[in-house]
Every structure is written in structure tokens, then in C-alpha cells.
Image (cartoon, rainbow, N blue to C red; front, side):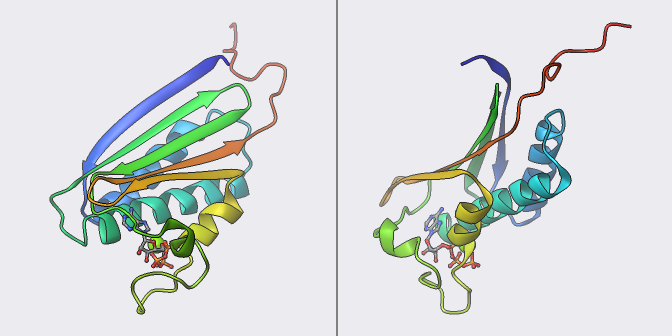
Length: 150
Ligand SMILES: Nc1ncnc2c1ncn2[C@@H]1O[C@H](COP(=O)(O)OP(=O)(O)OP(=O)(O)O)[C@@H](O)[C@H]1O
Ligand SMILES: [Mg+2]
């Protein structure tokens, strides 16, 4: 697997940074042959994962650290959103639609992530934190990744 680009961004767990994460990932992915609706879906998935880290992982406290990393290889974009918050006790349950811990919320974040991305992989441990990996593939065109020569 040839790595074409990678990035890592660390920010505090305040809600303003959901927008920062969206913009950063959109900019990172903009060099790839994703169409506009793919890009929109990636942004929604990232927003959901980052919101979860802030709202649930750190229970709304703005003092936690969220790490967003992204890796671009031939044909796929891999994004990781990680928090060192409370973790998820029953992941299988938490991923079902409408099964969140907060009755005021729809409980659809994971559902959106799974429907918008090709693969969603979650590592979590109570008291340690949560890491959500989001993968989306894209068609590789012949000259993608090459820069124009004059
Ligand atoms: N990073 C996280 N840390 C701790 N718990 C989490 C984390 N992400 C998700 N969860 C748990 O998983 C549940 C389901 O998450 P999901 O995003 O699907 O729904 P929600 O956040 O409750 O509602 P919505 O995303 O629709 O506002 C959450 O209610 C929460 O209990
Ligand atoms: Mg959510």
C-alpha cells in the first residue's frame, strides 16, 4: 500500500472544533476523485464521530483532547477519531439505531457513519477511551496523485 498523504490534528473537546474537523478533512480529501456528495458524506461521518468524542467521551467537558488523523493511500481514505474519555460499555448495543445513552438524542450517529462510509471500525475500552476508524474508497484514475508538469 502506497501512502500518498497523511495528517494528524489534535484539538480540545469543545463543540467549535467539530467545524474545524470537518473543514480539515474536506481539505485533506479534496485532492482525490471524490464527488461532492462523497465529500459531504465524509464530512457528516467525521462530524458524528467528533461530536460523540466531545459529548459522550468527555461528557461535554471542553478539557479533553480529540485526535483526528487521516491517511490517503491508493484508492482509500482512512480517518481516525480518537478520545481518551469514558469509553463505551456495550458497543454492540450503542451502534444500533436509536439506542444511544441520551434520550434527548436520536441515536443515529453510528448509523450515519456506517451508511456514509465503506467501513466503520470501533475500538473502545471503559475508562480508556474510544477510537473510530472510518474508511471510504475512491476510484483511482490514471493520473491521480501526479502533479502537472508545466
Ligand atoms: N466517543 C464515545 N465515547 C463514549 N461513548 C460513546 C462515544 N461514541 C458513542 N458513544 C455511545 O454510543 C451511543 C450511540 O452513539 P450515536 O452517535 O449513534 O448516537 P447519539 O450520539 O446518542 O445520538 P446522535 O448521534 O443521533 O445525536 C451514544 O449515545 C453513547 O452512549
Ligand atoms: Mg452521536
